[in-house]
Length: 135
Image (cartoon, rainbow, N blue to C red; front, side):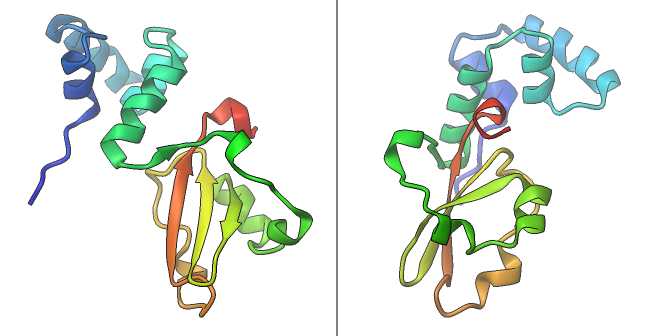
């Protein structure tokens, strides 16, 4: 079983932070109530793009590129607007047995559960966009 590296370890391994700077950031982050990546972006310690790149690697989710998809009105109807707003996601591509979505936060609970049993979307793929590209 492969163990997923934590974001802090990845930041150190990539040279974006030292153990000391990570320790200081973790102490400050704990009081903020934010997750580490959100804290580092919010405090402008690490740029959003670099956090997204690391999280895409960590989660094995392809980074969202709007040039890779054609969003159509019909595709927008695949997911209920309230569900899309709640989970901040947008459908990107629908195949016979899958639905590809972009989510601002792919770490949230599995929002695709409500339609997982549908014959047209048995498996799902996701893409990780930056919050600024979806908002």
